[in-house]
Image (cartoon, rainbow, N blue to C red; front, side, top):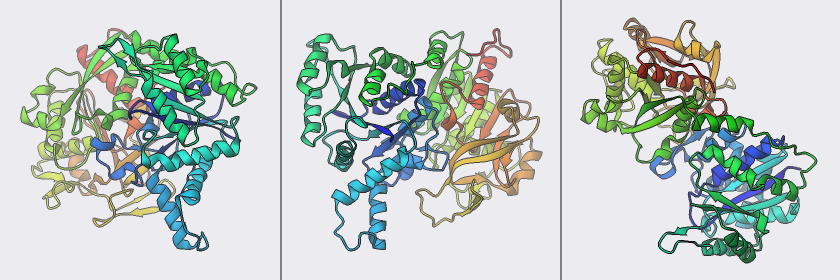
Length: 552
């Protein structure tokens, strides 16, 4: 039977439940246990696919094409397990499943209620996602006390009651604020948060106390006394300057050992081997080089919209002991000053996005990087912007555009994808009238790389698989014309119908891809494209050659 660790949060949101849970998962994995993770989100959207990036941050995509909460990105960066749509459940999906069963008559005429029908469906989803693992960490989104998360909390209370304290434990993350004027850490919010949990029948086994500074012994004792939690299980969770240090911080406080003992896993667990994490932290703290990368996006005021991207850039630096500084630029700013804000960077990246706002700024960014021989990496919308740039300025198509922004443009070099073959071999079809939610080209799909290209050299193999999330594609009617203008199509889908990657010759590093490679980058391994991109930035900064070769 899979042991379950339920992770809840109190007082305020955005405390870092996802990273804290993932850090614990990383330690348990380092102790030889088979680990998975899961997120239960209380919003009624079926998935975050149609939610504003300003509200939700990034939409993360799994191999099987699920659009999920960004916390799944944290999970996959910390543990080796590849997650699926089973690992991200929303209230909307739970209700959708229950209503579908009711319409079919599965409930035999019973009155459908939150208890037992909604809670039973939540439990079914948890058991389905966690089956076959030694330990599963299940994070409940939102904060304790919110009406939206009550069905999830009731479901996990029932699971603990059914399975017993040796098979299911509760870990609660709380805020211990520091009041500078008084010079004190205040434990009262934590006490009230636990009290709220206990009113619905949940007694935490472990407390992670998030604070600006380590908890003094007196405060730990006080919290333990008022919350009925073992003092040793009151864990100080401080702000760290590098999130990949957190597994060490938690391990030093024996959090993993407490979990092992509570779940009776002593015979299965071996001593923790955190050497890979030590190497990643060491590379971050002892760089031999530094580069500045401009990220030209549309949501730069809310950087959670680019969480996997910013982490992937840092990972690319880690693999060669290089500190990567990010210069966040609104694409409309580039348009306003005609690219002057790009003059002091070592490389330029244009990430994904949608809509016409800021698109011309992205096209201008591509043109600036192309003409000034600055390393350029275009991802999804960034590739489409590069294609429009090449079409307008090299291929003699001054009115080239994407039909996303101009349905009646004269030269639609980027158009709505209407049909493609999925990884399973099925044909997917879309039209202008299709739903927006869940109808993009989604998930892990293979592509074949062209010999002699930068892409082929970086990946080191002929066929690769990357995760996709987009609705518009390269228009094949313009393949020959753009290739004659100098564009290199460096990767195509396995059926040869879809353009996956492009490059430019006679440029130090101009590469763009339709997929989202940032979703497969990890701090321990990096990703070939991001490693290659940061290396190109280093070479550009050094004037064409590197003074020192290093690999982390």
